[in-house]
Image 1 (cartoon, rainbow, N blue to C red):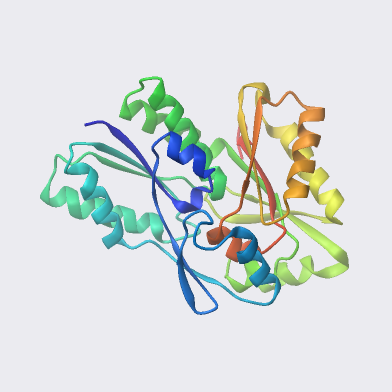
Image 2 (spheres, rainbow, N blue to C red; image 1 turned 90 degrees about the vertical axis):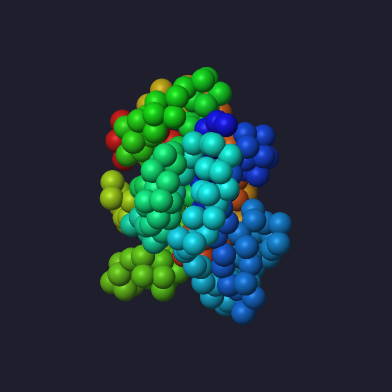
Length: 288
């Protein structure tokens, strides 16, 4: 019996961290070139192969995790007397969180004693992963389930997602932004800078000329918004552009007192909609 931290594969945390901290990950699925894959952190299909197929013109699709899958996963822990905290992909970007709510309600209806809390992270990729990270740290410190859940709910809208992408076309195709926003972004080598807003949706914040300036903009947003960076875990994620990720890390370390920065690949669930070249930094601020 204990507290189990559950999330989905959109968290994009390093697989070593997930294993070491016994985080239970429920995988998404995606389809590429007519083949269905489990999002298993690059084991079945490497990240590089995934992004190379997109560069060649392939158009992958993703599917939300079903209530049936959540119900089976939650029951496996409840049957052992465990308490569950599920930290899920933003409800503004996927129906997956709603599936988890349906599953929880189905279980609690017949087993009111089942201790399952589902949290809408209002976040994506390692923004969601950051909440999982802090939940695991609190668990190591012996915090109660309620203390962990209360901290997440009080701090989730402090998780900053700042990222740039090469093209808005993928987001337009997936219905994440309007055709007008995409058309404007394609002009004059403009590189969009986006964040995730308080409702958990994507927001085009700035449009800058060129990749170098867009990376510099991520640095400036971090410098302006990060609170006590010397005490934070900071994540950088990338869509098959590790050199840019290393460059951003070096810039942050040279101009701030950041405690620790982890670079990890952007998985296929968000990567399907952002395409190759996505680069983002994720951290805690006073607000988003």
